[in-house]
Image (cartoon, helix red, strand yellow):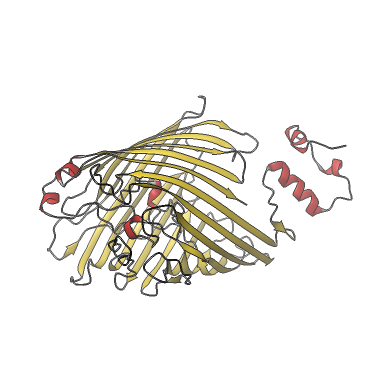
Length: 495
């Protein structure tokens, strides 16, 4: 006789008497995981050896996203596929010892852009390469100190300053050493880390066909202290951080000038800098405020910045703030949440005064915050926004099975038009800072984002969206000012 374990779980029955005394503990855990929808078929030896696989495919169509000009048929006005495969293996011979290795293979398919990363906005190709390789020592449930060393993701807070940038086809990882202190039942932890960001290594500057091992940039040092507490104020997570980035030079540089037609080089990966960042972040705990929620993050920077190799070092002082809140109508169908937020980041208000006030965005995942078309960073920005999110369907027993619809509307002004409008990478300027830009209206435009997500199973996530950018006076005053469109459909299969 076959039993429907899901039905038994719904009735609240225990599986123990039904399975019989001869069922092993491992078999019982497997059946319970299957019932809960969390069973991983790639987990072996009681979880000591676990494989993971991700296959992600995204179709993108973009029009005017880079030049905002209907009259020009740019290589970025195109449709393409972004393919990413990740293969990983976790080995945990002991509770306090873990070894993890992950490889990644990425392709940009059927675009007219060059396949060299970052050139003309391209995500490019990077054939199977090492994305993560780390050793983790320690179990904070038994002893308060643990360490992780090797190639790894760094992700803190909402990823406004430090994130894995997973939307991007490459993502981001670091060669890093990280130590965590997390005393038992104290409700807080502290991380200290030292790292070098991993950069894509094209073997040539044409189409990036040849394989070359990605290495971290030993001229770009990033270190910090980050602490998080859920006990300091029980209704929220409270976090504080002190970060330091010491980057010597503007490399790596990417170009594809040998192709026909020739493509101009990508902008510098980031500028030379020695910048301290002091910040505070708070975020309400779900379910604590009767439907209300809030979050805030503020950061202040000081140090020096050299915008170009030929320029002198400038004294750097800058700031950025985010504040948001919302209310979820729990009793209404689809549990709609209405939210508002405001983002601001300083820009350089006077060229040639020996100071730089343009906030350095560090290593963010900007795609999540300032419009899904990725035309803004947390830099030289005023950005009020409103969001409506609904969940028309969600499985009560398996919450990861859901359907959601989200609508975001952003307004954008430059903090100052003495500084550039920076894209999501924080370095690419939409328009040059010339006389027309300095005299232009600071209203850049507005963006409407519609997003639909459907997760039919734990292993499969489907995502699609449409975004429209309504060009503002700044674009009209500096050249072409046509609207832009972005359409995408993505599937992600992950075990």
